[in-house]
Length: 388
Image (cartoon, rainbow, N blue to C red; front, side, top):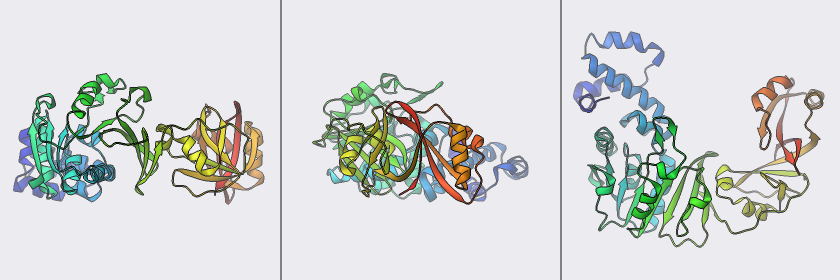
């Protein structure tokens, strides 16, 4: 979408079209577009339909705010979901940050979250369309007095007088995801240097970043939301005593550490713990093992076994009923014998695809079971259990 068409969406006619399209059915788009073009300019109808599609996609990240916001295709893909942005804004506010530079702001989702936490934000991006969307979003969500949007190269921004900087480099290119941190735009090395120019800073990176790429003076935080790992952030200036942190949303549970040795490897026990993905990415499985009195089933797989059941937000516990070597016929016979018709398949360290296994098992019956495909001391193993 061109910026002229975007600006037309701000007009009364554009707003009326967006309101009309709020809950439209994409399957009826062709007929709807044909009808609307009889009454409105074709370019405006196309822009409104495109924006309506983006808003529907964005609801998963922004909830009800999405229906008042403006997006670009890249903006929807790269934007931080509201729960994660609010968590980061609370951390900045707790550090006493009052003025912050948001570099590579995109459509302004983080800027809005920061402003809602009472922080004055300079939102910078080199895309005129992204900047127009960020300005529109600040107005639509009532924080325009705290958000200044500037269309510029982030390398040219003077950070003097700012308490903090937040940088979210572009990690996608024409060929998809970018895995080399130095190929980010701007590169990780530049963003780290910028982070060290203010008292506090946060730098968003890919969750799969190698731990050796984390600077020695940074605290690395992995954040999951609803059980899915969403991002990793390098924090500067926090004075954290532990190098790694895993944060689980929406509860806001935070686990720190990163200095314990790997847990001992032992046999299958009554309870199996499946650590949250953020815990695993942060290399904090040992901290969870210490809390639940558990050990690893295999030195390369993040499943923990323990004789005790200890409530913890950092792992899901299962009661294990059966342990057997992987054998499809034997597993199918056992599930049929027990009348298991609902099978949840989880795997770590197995090449078997869960959907393929579920199809081959052909489960039938009123009962349910969780099947774990994994390794125990290097041997392919099947564990059967139920949520504890």
